[in-house]
Image (tube, rainbow, N blue to C red; front, side, top):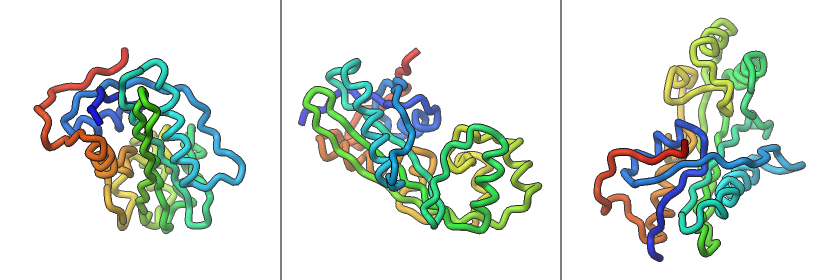
Length: 207
């Protein structure tokens, strides 16, 4: 397959920053989709469905591109979903429930060829063991980083790393929101090898 220009279907600055690590030119645009979970949908099903939906939402506007969609879902061991908290009180509740627990983060990844409709879909699991957290630690952390737009109520790339006692998984980038190892596999499947490309200094982002 002939490589196409890349488009990252995301408004997340964290995903954009991660994608630059592959040294490939790309553009970025924000998809507009409903991220509500369907009834009886598992965390893995939700993550992969939303990743695919994000990619497909931009296909008509960006023909001729390979579109990367990604979405992360967090859940407790009993299957309870931990959505983006949206506010301080919900974040306090999430971290209190996660305290001392093993939380799974499932990151859905989709690579869509907007021209042909071909698509690759993957779900990358990653597990975080939370320390036993005191209320004052939770409050101070949330006031420091205000991770109210992040599934699980933390930012892995910042002080959030101090919330954990152990991490398990193939690709720690997936915890930030974009599994680069799986994405590299997908790109190589379609003939684009990041290790054989000329260096890129910056990416073009939608204004």
